[in-house]
Amino acid sequence: MKNMTRLFAGLALVGALGTSTAWADQPGADWTVTKEQAQASLKAAGYTQITKIEADDGHWEGEGLKADGMKYEFHVDPHSGKITKDEMDH
Image (cartoon, rainbow, N blue to C red; front, side, top):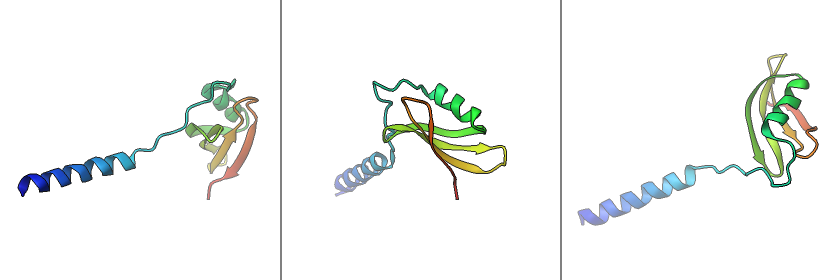
């Protein structure tokens, strides 16, 4: 009986660990804009700090701070480097 309890406890732990891991998308093979180039575009647009940037749903996506001290969400096109979303994060 103790072995069954240990087995189920172990399975529950493995299942919990597996579901809590978030896997980010990978940049597409045809992306011409690197993460560093996307960050440079954001800095040129007034971002003073990039707090998160990752490949997601076909673009660079993340969060950062601007000179006004507010937090913003952004998307950067992976082909042109153009910022396609630039909204204050509420």
